[in-house]
Length: 417
Image (tube, rainbow, N blue to C red; front, side):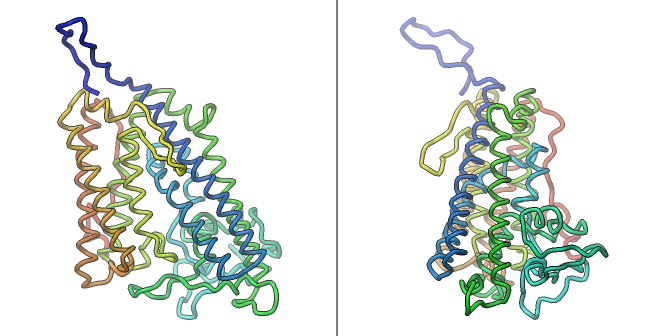
């Protein structure tokens, strides 16, 4: 809201309200984070119940319900990714819940053509089939698959980031299995019989597979409960941004710029297009990448506008970063609002095409002109808005703000070295 410096000409004319304060804007930011993580937690609990039903009574219907619950859980979570950059509490935690890509052979059976990744000797470990495993030369009892085994032993085992054992994408793999279609049509096609505890079990070790899926889902719920509390009224993440509103603004703009530029436009979109590689697709087992990208874009806009639409349709809103910018540079506010709308529209075009039958991994195929145009349009819109986010940093007089970069945008030649 623009600050007015002149008095009203008539006493009957109300004075415009003053622009929001930095402290008020940062408080809204913390409120949006708390609501987003609370919705993520609630939808993860729904997923947890659906997974329990699948394990109890494996069938086409219970598998489909668990997959639907996973899809629903991604919607609020992706809108929280903008809180990761600029907030060390979130960034240090994020790898537990949304790390990708993953060497799925660490967890379960994979196609015979998969082969061991030369840089990761654990890429075909298949803990579900191995009650005793060896990591770093040490023999480990894996007879009981528990949250502790996943978190303390398997996740990022041997210090290798591709050894992702927990989080949304590990659960995604357990529900869909590998997507063996490359840039062709189709997602993963794991059968419900992989969870049968009686005759007819496919893939072997159905009891251990069920234990892994349940443990991974329980971990997701506990991790999201932790982060929801961190943004609560007495939480550490909220306290960190409210202690110094200027640093809170730095976190807000760092999150917007880093997700917009280096992470989403670069690592998640441009890189895969350059390599024509479906393995660079974020939700690669379920073919849900179009939704994850779209809701990342929505999350960036949420922070600028100070508004989040909750899973139940209600709205959390308050004094916004947009108010501060409008008070100092109205033209920039108008431009950035338009650019945020344009990037969301470009991501919506990708989403619409995917839901119409052109999956994101198909868009990555070399020579797919329509897919290349859709992805490039979204990348260009994200890069454009990042320049205005940088101007917002300058307008607010902030220092020490640095956005994540990506070789795919900053040094394309390095991608192929």
